[in-house]
Image (cartoon, rainbow, N blue to C red; front, side):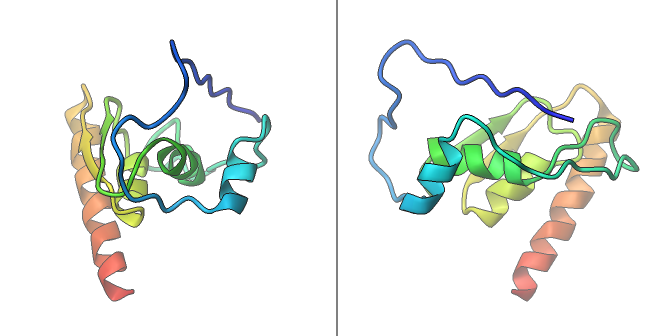
Amino acid sequence: MSELIIIAHNEEAKKIEPGESDLSADEFMIYTNDLWFISPETDRELHPAPFPIEIPSRLIKLYTWKNDVILDPFVGKGTTAMACLELQRKFIGIDISQKYCDISTKEIEKAKRQLQLW
C-alpha cells in the first residue's frame, strides 16, 4: 500500500514567520527524501481510512514551528490533532460528520490523558 503526498508552492518553500523548530538535521534529511517507508495503520474500527500518526508528524515538523496552529479540515478520528499535541502545536479540527467530530474529541481527550502521564 502507498500514499502520495504532493507538496506544491508558488515561490521558495520556507517558513515565513520565525519560530522555534524541533526538527533535527537527521529528521530533515529523512523527511525530505522522495520516499518514506512507514507501516500502514490497519485499525479500521473508528474510521474506514486511517493513516499512521507518523505521516502528519513528519509534515508538521517540516512545515511548522512549535506553537503554530494546524487546520485539519477532515479531522476523522483525530490523528493529525494527536500529532499536534505530541509536537506542541495548536490545532483546529473540522469534519462534516458529527460522528467523526465525536470520535475525534474522545480520541484527543484520551491522548491528552496519556501525555499527562509522561
